[in-house]
Length: 164
Image (tube, rainbow, N blue to C red):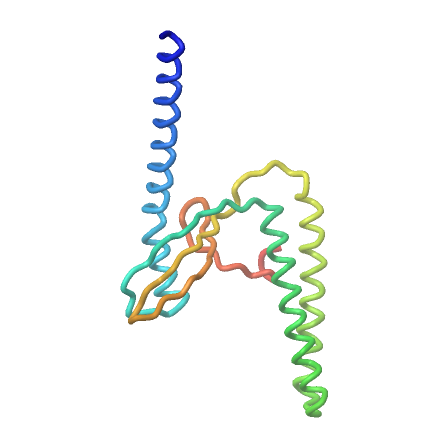
């Protein structure tokens, strides 16, 4: 009988903990709902917004953010190199020169972010940003999007060139 009572208390404690965690998650979602709606309207330019649904909120520390920036710069480099090849074939020397400068800037920023990855690899994990995954619904259109929010609730638009 005593064991049954202990199991009942343990079960009640776990149920209470799960309920509290789901309430906390819902509170966080509600806290960031207005900022998410603002992001859709201002950054994505969606004006006929019906609703926004936050699907997931992840924490991002400095190391993870530096890796995201490195990946972003790799994508930018691939796109710039592809455009560079196209303008070389077309004979547009002015556009080729501009792209050459852009490729050099991407490489320099990539080196800086690589150093940031190395510097933060073993650092304590503290939240730098929250990564919000959400859907918006507008005029019979639905789309998923991602964006960053600072711990104090402000929208953060990543800029790998300005942040180092």
